[in-house]
Length: 220
Image 1 (cartoon, rainbow, N blue to C red):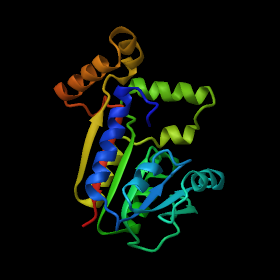
Image 2: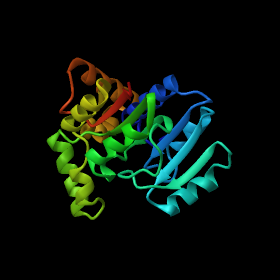
Image 3: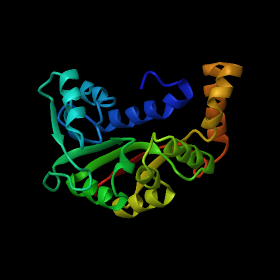
């Protein structure tokens, strides 16, 4: 995520910091929707054993070429029906992949494969802000996103379902004014724009207006 501007990189830095607090070299981690390994490198750097999964065999082939280590396992998997036994993993992580499956089925599968006291950590977009919803729809009209993915983008109702399932979740919201980032950077530069964004996020109890969220839930 190093190619992101500072205001947009902040939630990913926080996501990684939360993972670092709950992982060690004995952890067995499941990454769902791993893509081409954009976030897999950080997981492997912790020394943990990582099972990177994706629906695309090609994407997993790219991951295997990028990371030559016995700490990595790759497996083609549908996140709606994970091919693993109950309570197989110490941690499940997801970076922007929750909308690529039926929300309820994905939640069920994440919970099922987690060990007792296992942790689920995710970063994703939030779909409550009408400005961001409109922007996603424009991308759909351009053929850059599918309608099903847009409709399944996480919202506050979905986060409530995670809270009901796990009993308790911890969330942090980012980017209430991320749509202004390009203009702010031109006017003030990245560092000042990041400070402005942080101040707005802290001054206002943002939820519905957020661009990104980071979620952490522990299985009891």
